Structure formats: C-alpha cells, structure tokens
Image 1 (cartoon, rainbow, N blue to C red):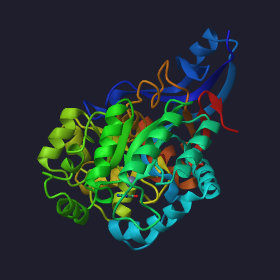
Image 2 (cartoon, rainbow, N blue to C red):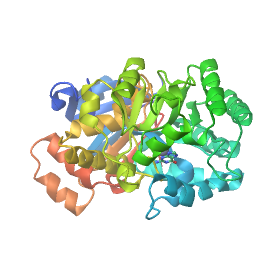
Image 3 (tube, rainbow, N blue to C red):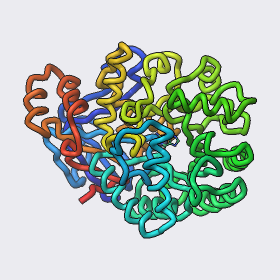
Length: 430
Ligand code: GUN
Ligand code: ZN
C-alpha cells in the first residue's frame, strides 16, 4: 500500500459553477473534513472521522481550524517583472517603455533570470499560488530559468518565450524566424516534462509584425495541444494603436484571428474593451478571458465586465498580471475583483471569487481535470488558510454567521500571513 497522508481541517470544494444558480449551492464545505493524498494525487475526500476510520495507516496532518482548499491558480503573470512591481505613474505603453522593457532586457543574463525565477516562485508559493501561467522575455535563458525552477519544485506551470519583433527597444526584439525557431526549440525541450506546459506567447499584436504573428499561428497549428497566451483590449489608446497598425483587421481580436491566433486554448489577458463581434467569436471558439483586476486599476486600464461576460457563458480565469498587477497574492486579486464588481454594480459572492481563483483559472487553462479543486484524482496542490491571520480579520471572522462570512474578511484583507501551509504534488512545503 503506498504511503498516504491525511489532511484534516475545514475543507472547501466546488461541485458546479457558482455563477450559475445560487453561489453557495455550488460548493461543499465541511466543518471537519479531510483530504487523503497518495502518489501526488487526492485519493479520498469526506468527513474527518470517516476518513480516519477508512485509512488508519495514513499519516495525519491535523490543521485544526485551518481551511484546506485547492492551491490558487494565477492565469496570467510576468515573472520577469517581479523587480519592477509597483512602479509609479505611467499608463500601459509608457509603463512598458519606462519600466518593463529595461527590466526585461536583463534576462539575457542566465544568472539574473535564475535568481529572479527563484525569488518569484518563493513569493507566489508563500502566497498560496501553486500554478501560474507566466510570460518570460524574448531570451531563451529566461524560459530555461523559469522551467528549471518549476521542475526542481515539482510545480504545474505554463510559460513561454515572449516574441516581439517591432515596437520594442534594441536588444529586446527577435525576428519572425528566430522567434519561431527559439519557441519551437523550447517547446520541444520542455512541453510535457514534469508538469510543465509550453504556451506560445506573442506579447501583443503591437509588438509583432504580421510575419511574426503568421509564424506563431503556424507553430500553434503544428502544436495544437499547447496553449497560446497574449493580451487583448487592455487600454483605449492601445486599441486605437492596434487599429492603426492593422488597418485590415475588423477589430483587435482580428489582429490575432487573421494569423491563426484564435482558437480553443487561447488565453486573452485583460479583455476590457470588447466589441460584440469579438465577444461572440471568443465564445464561439471557447477561448479564455483572463481578468487581471489589480493591474487594470494600477495601470488605469478599466473595469472588466465579469457579470456580463459570465452571463454570456465566457470561460474566465483570474490573474495577478504582476508586475503590472500590484500584488503577488491571489487573495488580494480576489479582493480587487470584488471591488471592480462593486464599481460595475455587481457584488461577487465569496464563492464566486474563490471559484475564479481556483476552478475558474483551471478551466481557463484547460487543466480542471488535473488541478483547481478538491476532487478525487486531482493533483494534490493544496493550501491551508488561517481564517484569523491578523487581529483585524480575526475580530471580523469571530462575528461571522456561517462559512462564507467567515471566509470573506480573509479574501478582502488577507495576505501571505493567511497562508499557513502549502502542498505541492502531494508533499508539504517545509
Ligand atoms: N501588454 C503588452 N505587454 C504587457 C505587459 O507586460 N503587461 C500588461 N499589463 N500589458 C501588456
Ligand atoms: Zn500581462
């Protein structure tokens, strides 16, 4: 019989989408539940006492009042922007030119890339994020560094070499051919190794020529099981720039669609200023939209229409977009999604917020059969939350009527102090 671990505490899992029907009906919460883990997978779930009786040999990890859930999934981030998070005063294009591009220039240095990747994974794991879909830079070294760290830590990750062959400074451009060749070599070397997935990564249409977008479309057609990640309709000025750069395109989405960069497995970050045609095409092909609320407020981009897009049946994940986003924490990101919802007139329920950061992001990455929920057969990437991690949160949750009220102050005010334990692929982090 394989060695197994039994985690005990409060448990939360999702049975359905909390945007359909009553949010609280979508989840199963146990006051005293358990999660059995063996061989890196969740192998049993239920009431703590039943699990103890069924699995007397299991090693018990009793987390008391801690809340055990799936680890958080950050569906869009830029690990090379770790060091420039919280850079003051610019909107998107100026922010890229002033802060982002000079920092990304450093990632041709393999040592710098390695040190940043290490720091980045330390930061996200301490915040309870067990899977991320990250951009790298144009440098293959930046991709190697990221995947090597992910492999060493046994993490399920998505990433790819960012390609850019125009509107970026000297030293931060590849070409249509070298972008294709480097991406293909990295994809062949890393995709499917450990729990690594390669994502084809054209930064956004302003920084690629039609030739480069064509090459990326071809690479995706040759590797249809890969995801493709990019940015879409983040700021009004950016949308106007795309219209100038691609006069034949019907809209921003068409600057991807024309080149084979629309399909299931496409991840579009931001997606704030969508036309009706764009929404219906994205829905039709079942591509994913990624909501980046701290970034959209920090860079001054706008308010994502969660309620409307979910009502239309769009596939939506949640993300930090660090370093345009201002936090590595998916708790802070859920809080920002709540605030954006309020500004648009819809109060997202804590079940909806938590679902977005776990199951929603997993579905957006098409990995919900593997991660994002407490489910038998899922990979055991888990977090244990302390729902009284600060005096302010503790006094509020002590007043709570019911589980969702007890969770909500941690969503709104929690940070890495609320993350008491993290499990990766069936093993607890030290
Ligand atoms: N659009 C193109 N590149 C980026 C980036 O690095 N961050 C954000 N927020 N938007 C982008
Ligand atoms: Zn981004």
